[in-house]
Length: 111
Image (tube, rainbow, N blue to C red; front, side, top):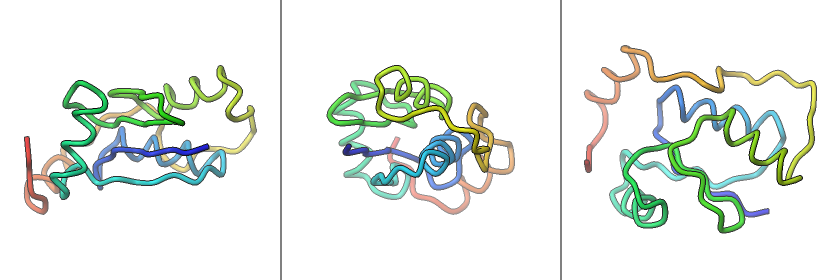
């Protein structure tokens, strides 16, 4: 299975997607849409919208999703199975005010 995740470096939603990938032991490509204009443009082109996270699984794009939504899709499609492991981050949570401030002061914005 080929997974490309278009994520922010520090974001509640993005950390939730990463936590689901780790919970299920899935290899994926983590593309930084904050610090890389080409990766952001690719995400927008493929997903048809500007919001992240977006996760492409074997060519199927899940746009503006939480970790919970990614996990639900993968379970429904039989791409992974239920397990009792705990995610190491909240899988359905927005960025905190502190995370937003960190992104403003440390990253380059393309949107």
